[in-house]
Image (cartoon, rainbow, N blue to C red):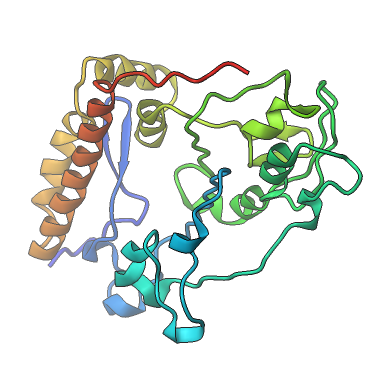
Length: 267
């Protein structure tokens, strides 16, 4: 039995890397049962897909506890007790309300802000702070990054994209203030480096070595080996599973480099 419990904020460290640990038994305070220990930090994710769905394959059948998943969301069946589906919601501020066409820009901009975007193609954009950033201010201090904004298309910062609306409205659903979008990261590699790399000179060295396809696990190998010797059987197994999951993500990112580029039609 480990006589000196590890801090919940303990990291595996290497050159330019700070790899957070999963919840291990050795982080429990002495005298606490596992089921009474404070839960891990809350995390919240928002996903927006602007092109709609095929309703006949999406909308569940039935209601209440007896609903049935449809073809598109059938994969959620194994976790249905954790899923709540809500229908018939709408944002009034995503409607024209006198602003004419431009539904795509309005809907994306309103999704997390609940505010009607100022219709402009210039720099005088104005919207509102989004709910993800409001929540991040409260719970983000408990995670490595307060928030992480990811996308699949380049973030357009100027020009008109939809019937007189700025392209910024089309490219961002997360807003730090009425005039400052959060921006999005579209590179899986850079997103991974933000999660595991550290800033400054050490971070630069990490990024250079990572460019040579060195695994983040290579950076923390010595620290991980030392930790394995300090923890019990259950924690060793959990740590091994965690490190393997990190490696699996790295392999997926590496495979993306071999995919052909996707042509994005010009506006």
